[in-house]
Length: 259
Image (cartoon, rainbow, N blue to C red; front, side, top):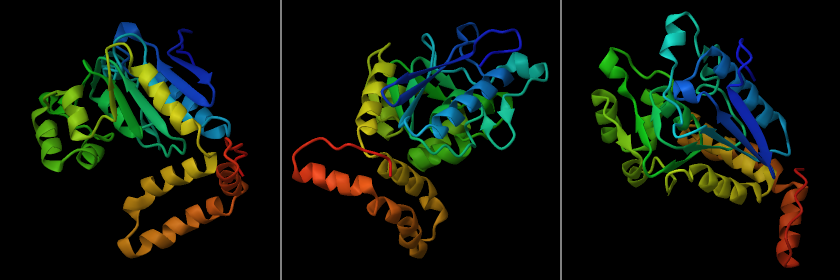
């Protein structure tokens, strides 16, 4: 996961079923260029391909999550938007595994859109989100317009999108955008603790919950339960479901097999 010059821009690490993906371009405030987008796409594909990886955590090195698009690289013809996958290789990708954003410092423009592409957000109290594109005659097409009004009250989202003003993490937490707050420098640790609570659970059940939640908006009300049942019926009939019941009855920890 390196640039053409050989500099590593994305690091990955495995921690007991948790896959940590770290953007490492501190000199550019973790802005995303083409090579970094491709590296992130590769990392997310690895997360989804591994049955032993239950949860992903996306973060940035240093004191910044991501300043969004690398405008210098973009001006030189290097795009961080990948066909079929969107900005940073993730904003339009269909990611099956739960993904948590651990945000320190600024998550601006595409940085906010990357966080919105995650299922949950843990942020330091001094973190800041924002979609400032309107200041530059642009719009946020990689999730800002589509996802922000779904994650916070619509009128507040519209205000933020039309003014381009920043959203402090503590306000974002009150609005429901941020799941948990941490002290500065501790967002990753807090995200890992949340991920560990998820990774403890049955893998088939976790995957089914994420799939149904993500696909629910595509279902009409009358179709929601039949569509859900197609996804969850194999889970309810699985060996893991029987193991969970036995473990409860025997007052012991379950031994998940993912089948």
